[in-house]
Image (cartoon, rainbow, N blue to C red; front, top):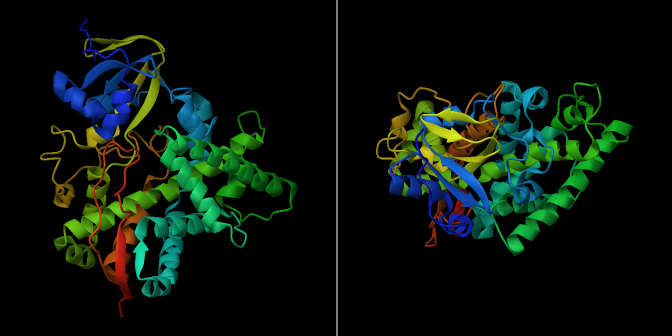
Length: 415
């Protein structure tokens, strides 16, 4: 049996927070290995990156998800009791509920709602002078996904809901005020979503058939019981929050168009180029850094022993930048996707494995659709200037974003 390389620090939690997305990759490079062990939050933790590691990590016979995410993340980002933390038949049934929402026509409808919101906002941008794209996209996505899900928004409610959804996204790896903002936003969000579910169930709110709100409110477990109010609220937020998080990819797409202007014409002229561009944005830019699981029972892999109950982290960002998988990964090169095979274990910004039965994000198709729509709108519906600003992306901040939020000025609609 081979010993797993070990990080010598007694606890690497602070190093993880300082290094951010590079924490696992830098240590893998240091040890010349795609696996090492350390202590995070005082718990022994195995860290992995690469294709073989991703294929291992999504083996449901070897890993479980229940309680794998630290409690801090459950109290802010994902909620407790949601689909991300289920295993076996319970996960399969809950995942099927989410996949029922992802029919191509439904994904297209959400994309069209986002497009409509964008076009509606253009006149205000023309008058505004300066517009921060990240803030605007968060509002547009919140309104679009609520409409799509059958979630009503009262007059004046949009800003509050968008702010809370953003706070949940921002707080998962945070400490101090940013963490507490996320925790309070989670409490408010679950109370709001729970009220909506109860109103659908008692008939006081007519939710559209097939919409996420009604599907979740009417969902039954294996025993034929409806989801508990709090769990239903968590799952409704698991539709809304990840969709709003796609706004970060939209901002990164705008940044890529700014940094690589030759691609502006290419994506306007060719659908395949848009597909390649969007996939490279997802590979190149940071989204969520890692995902977690627990060892189901002790096993050996490539000569290494994985003890039962040990927490394991898969490096999403590091796998997307692995030199063995992506030649010159530090370069933004959409053409690398010209002949790319749709490998579920190499491009994993939202997790790996299969959509239908595994833990890969059910909303990945939504992400790609919304990004394609945004690229088309950025290059075809408007023209704008990008004034001097701080566009640096700090990889120690999780989740990352250009420091300025990507400000544009002199917005004008095209003919």
